[in-house]
Image 1 (cartoon, one colour):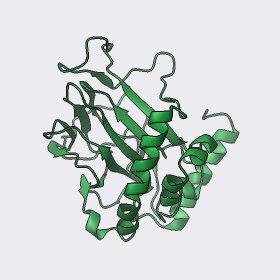
Image 2 (cartoon, rainbow, N blue to C red; image 1 turned 90 degrees about the horizontal axis):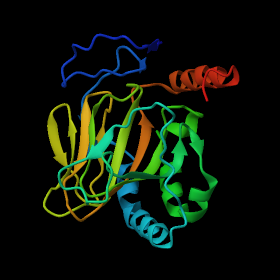
Image 3 (spheres, rainbow, N blue to C red; image 1 turned 60 degrees about the vertical axis):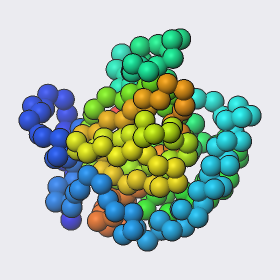
Amino acid sequence: AKMAAVSKGGIVRFASKARPFPSLLCVPGLYQRPVWPTESIPWMGALRAAIPDIVAEYKAVAEAGTLQNDYSLKDGEATLHKAGSTAEPDVSDAGRWEWLSYVQQGRRNAAFAAECPRTVEALESIPDFMPSAGAMPFSYAFFSVMHPGTAIESHFGPTNARLRVHVPIIVPDGEQAKLTIAGEELPWREGEPVVFDDSFEHAARNDSPAQERVLLLFDIWHPHLSRSERESMCAMFDDARQKGWLS
């Protein structure tokens, strides 16, 4: 069985952009690539079929204001996002990045489930959906709203045990919004999911001066991890929570 290695601060970073560099939990020996082909993923067809419902539910909650932004920083925590050159005049130096969350650190939000039942159904039907095995602190699912002129700086995700999925819902015209992963630029395209390993260096930006970029973001288990390995990791973090080591 693979053994996970937990990294703590003070690491000397000499890794290149083309190499994974998980900042907290590393599972050695996993096959890794920055971007994964969606055609190799068995459940991708069902997700694509659900996209019209996902888009409709996002637009409904955005118009009604029934879900509130729940992205927040702890005291002293640095922000990754910032205002770009095309930001609106009233936007702060940090730009504007909002989350409407179904899952944060493995915990589900009942209010989201009530407002977006078809989106939740699509997520929960995915066999590799990360929260399905337990309350992993690295598992998220949310509508990600990047306002005009906002950029997210280059960073590494916390673990190589997951892959991250982007389902673009609203994308500005003219390839003004894009993801950069391991040095490769990938413009988002509405209705075309992207699956990537966020333990590689990555960044995001919306250079549109007027249009938001909205996507459904969620985490899945690395497909090469067995069920027992997934359950072992969840048990490890459950134990840490019970002992008060995790919030």
